[in-house]
Length: 140
Figure 1 (cartoon, rainbow, N blue to C red):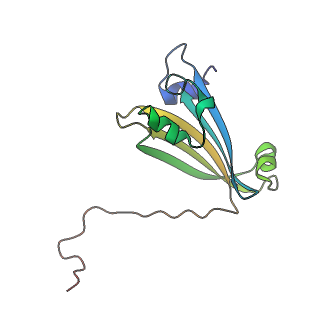
Figure 2 (spheres, one colour):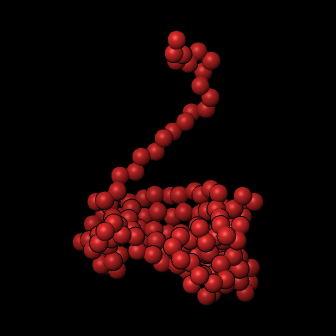
Figure 3 (spheres, rainbow, N blue to C red):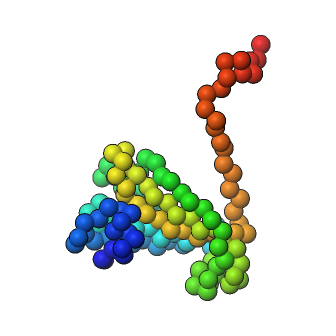
């Protein structure tokens, strides 16, 4: 597929490059929890139908598994299409997550947009503030 202008910029594509788009509905039992829509360069994923269970396991086979990612999480109300897929009321809270994943070389491999049901997720983050002071809590 031809990339959108946003995909071209984020993935660092050149004129004539193609993208692969993968959409997945994440379930817990029969309950839809999240919609994931990933874009990757077709050069790095020439046959998306070969993915059996995990995108990252598949990418690992060709040495293209991401090693880090940056995610942006924000709250947004579910539109009609996403509410239908997530079996949630239109206008209810959802968590929009944009993730850019990187190879060890620093090259961007994946751009993913996901929307999670706001009533099923609780995110926790640990913050670290540099090295511990020399006189930090020492247990005798």
